[in-house]
Image (cartoon, rainbow, N blue to C red; front, side, top):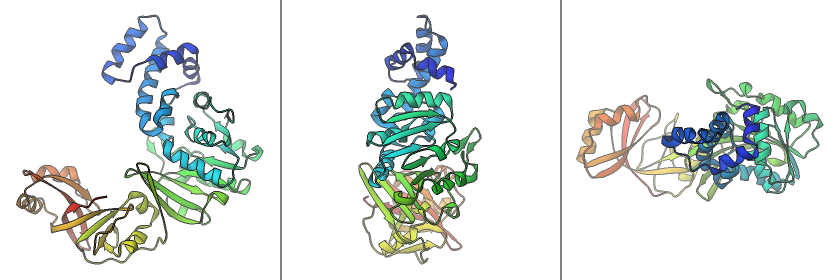
Length: 391
């Protein structure tokens, strides 16, 4: 989106049109656009309004009820922090005694909105003019929030705030940037701001190499309903303790894990198998979960934990092992037929076969449902037939 389109949306007619559109329906959008244009509405405004309708529909899962009053960009929505997680970011600043914060990469303003909602004084800085205009609209309800159109890295020395927050861009037209030095701005440049502002929080990609994390940082990986959505580095008073943490969020419940990042020992398969949450794996805390389960890895390089008994934990999904067979489609199909299995959930780690390749070869018929776990133990490639334990 360019600045001219943003200004068009921000006119009274533009805002009224966006808010008047019915819930987005891809099948009807073309005809709806044509109908609105026949009423004499600027075609550029019609296209922009329909895009907002689609983006708002896409944003509900991330931004909840706030979506209905926001203006969005595609890039901004993709990078925006999920509202429930942004609220946790803001609470961390508040609990550290922070009263004023600069969001150095404001985007459409999701994190800035969360800061402002908790009463913090917020300076939201965005270098893209169109995005800054939309962020200003999104922050209109809070008198303590202001948007600055500028390159934040040129302003940091002059910022009179208690703390900084940054969410460097990690996407390009070609895909995601995985090297922290390819972030925009580069991670090292952001981390250097600790010299002037020790209270620094940085949202990073979950795949960040552990060696890129400063020794004095608290690195926290976050999963929501089973999907790893971010990692963040907290410094100074924002860090509760240096080291790695995993925050596992399911619905309204959140569970936090810290501890040793030492690798667990490996041993034989037992009657129960656990798959750690993705945030636990990314944080390197698999060994910590194995210790809590009284278990061990089934292979030194694979994040499956064998345990002697079922243990309730929010940090791993549990299974009761029923049978193991060689990882060969015919052997797996025969074992499933014997158990009258007509539906399977297929999981894999450490092997090159994919669920999409295996499923049609099983030719399932039956009334039961099981989980098939494809993995290896040393040189053995196995399929483990298992029942899912209650969460």
